[in-house]
Amino acid sequence: GQGERFWDFAMGMGLPDSLCSANTIAVASLLMGPGLTPDAIVSNSPGSCNPNAKMHAFASDYLGIPQFILEKPVDETRRGRDLYYQYLKRMIEDIEEWAGEELKVERMREVMEKAYKCVEAYHELWELRKPKPCPVPNMFNISQLIARTQLWGRDEGVEVMQMMVEVAKERLAKGEFTADEEIARLYVSYIPYLFDLGGYFTWMEKKGITILGDVLAIHYFPEMDFSSKDSMIRGLAETAFDYPMTRQMGANSMSMKWLEDIKYAAQDLSADGLLYCGHHACKHTEGSIAYFRREMMKELGLPTLIMKGD
Image (cartoon, rainbow, N blue to C red; front, side, top):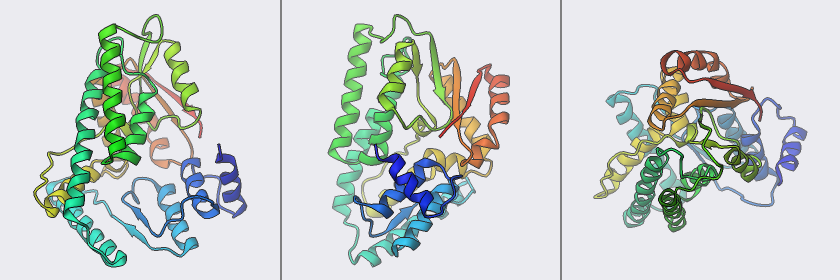
């Protein structure tokens, strides 16, 4: 409930209102306080989101703290991925030197093993979205996003992901669906709504509309080798290279990779249509949405509802 306060603070500093509120409000909360006071900023997405990159660079300069950046090559071949792995190793070494301690292999393995329990639950949830009607509550899209970005590799993350799987399985067994019938199955082709969470998602459900996922829900996890620090770092590099928006917006062809990912999800989960709500801060998607909608209709016959918002 603090969004407007932080937004007004950022505007009062003279920052442009063409930045998206997600990045502006988050960074303004660091500058204004009280709350998190970071010692450093670590970013792996400077090429996939310009407002994100600019706001973190600004915060680093304003707070006088270091910023560690992981550059992503647009080369999607094995050569590009190997280069990314080398970049990640170098960044970890830089952080170790700055922090004055080395990354502990035992601790890393403990976190990674928990992360892959979350991965197992993620794959189960994906499969549970396929039945008609879908037994997975719409609100679980946001719960999964929060677990993926904030809790992956923690006990809480495992608990949340497994709980969602259990609830969905129970609903499937009972044939439960919120509305009398499932009227439409939509896939959100961009980021989900990040405001009025319960109201938006549950309202859609009550109208018989299932939200099957969004652009941040399409993950590809490699087989993980837990045997050594280097093998786990390589697995992390593969995962980070394919993190949704990093993979799409940082690809050699953003529009093609975005289209490819959403086509896969929409087909696999039997979507009836797509929903896009973008804003002027994201030049990537705004510049490609007309092409995206035309190609989705041409190739899959799926309409895309385009709205503007922030």
